[in-house]
Amino acid sequence: MNTQRLLHAADRFSTLAGKASAWLIVVLMLVVCAEVFKRYALNAPTAWIYDVNNMLYGTLFMMGGAYTLAHDGHVRGDFFYGRMQPRTQAWLDLVLYFLFFLPGIGALTWAGWTYFNESLAMHEQTFNATPLPVYPFKFVIPLAGVIVMLQGIAEMIRCVVCIRTGVWTPRLKDAQEMDVVEQQLASSTYVDEAARRDIMSKAKDIDEAAHQRGGGGRDPT
Image (cartoon, rainbow, N blue to C red; front, side, top):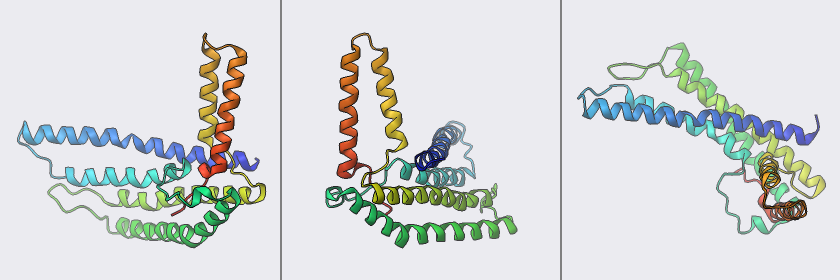
């Protein structure tokens, strides 16, 4: 397996984890709607609803970290960073990953595993009329930490590749978006073959220019 396939495999795994966790939004919406109906229509509020909402939202938030990192979605102050050459961006990112990302996510994963084990040992429950187990929710902390760590290692490999080659490797989403554009153009009856090739060539030029400007860069902070 070459480096590009390895990086795309990491992106796919993080994307799968993020999209699977995104369904918790639907569950959260249904739980809230059901509670609103019970509380105001039936005058029968549920004691554990507040805890369930917190657990669902917390799980969604933590499991979305690797997905956001894989798709370069974290907020970044780009005024200076975007003007740097790709190699400079890669060196800066790699240093920041070593200084902040690895210690921070490592500590999160280790502490989360400790919290989970302690909670499991005592069979920790919530404090309400209908207690719920807490340890399944606390297990999400080390789980999310491991997934983010794996994606972060993939990002560090991207930095090393960029330092060697001078360009950022294409992201999985970039390849997918280009495939979608090409499929749509191929199925269109209003675009001939010459126009399709010209559009794809210009789209690829724009994509490469975005990477050179720093669009493919990373921000571990």
